[in-house]
Image (cartoon, rainbow, N blue to C red; front, side, top):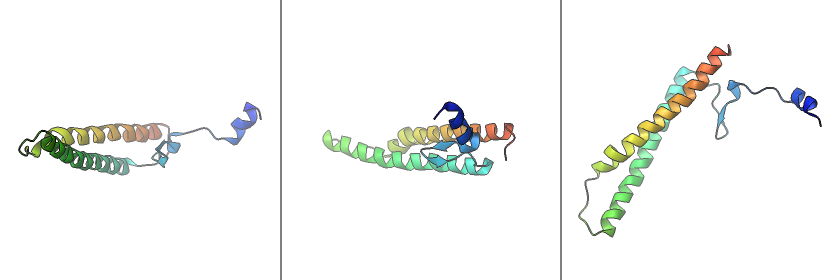
Amino acid sequence: MTNDSQASTFPPATTADATLFGIPVGRFGFFSSLLVSVASGFMAFFLTTFCAIFGIMIYDSAHHLPMQNLNISYRFIAAPVGLTAMLFSLAYLFSIWIRRKLAGQK
């Protein structure tokens, strides 16, 4: 097969075909992008909080220390991770949305 015949069988990729880990995110609207971004930030926050609490408990038991204040797990570990995940997903999804709008697609 030559490149000319391949070009005719495969349509050009557009922003509507954008995927993230196989999930099609190219057709999300403004509010869908906002909702998915906030949800990913919450998921990252709660997963990091869970891991940080267990990490603090393992650290305390390994060093035979009294239980540390577990507020550290969400204030200084999980909150920055959750906010960073939310900001990255906002930037990615809104850039796809803006490119689609500038290209004239619905």
